[in-house]
Length: 215
Image (cartoon, rainbow, N blue to C red; front, side):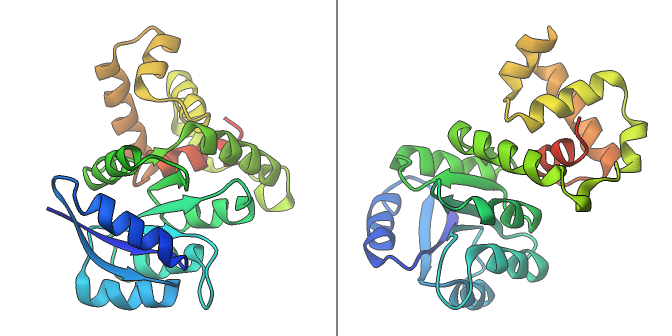
């Protein structure tokens, strides 16, 4: 059973998600919070596997809450619920350890699938959001904070750099395999090796690394 904590300051949304997701096989709604501070407190007591986190909330926003939760409860994974107006928070939430991004108009089936994917160790960014993420990261990469290229880039082969670039563009394994004329199994093995080389946690961090270093 996957224990999920719902965090949003719109009660109508959390109640709707509680009713719908609570009926999905293998998913248990273990708590509801209306701001990031309460979400952090509930993580202490409820130990959720997944936090479905809104971004803009009173008292503490989702990006800050994600940082605190990942610092003190590293096994808890965060999926951020976003809108196209939340660009300024996207980088912070991903940098702070969010494992997924979903638009608020995602279907219940998409949300349930995202919960299962992240629970099993994957990362998920909807294509619509990935486009915004890459655009935002590209803008930020032009700023003074991102002038220096990470030295770890030097240990990557050209093939690995190609894979990093495509991951940074939001491509999935099937798309990578088609683009590079490799099997999906080979792509998976390459990504595992790259993550180990770069000492990164997951695909989301790899996407951030790729864009920050202009791969």
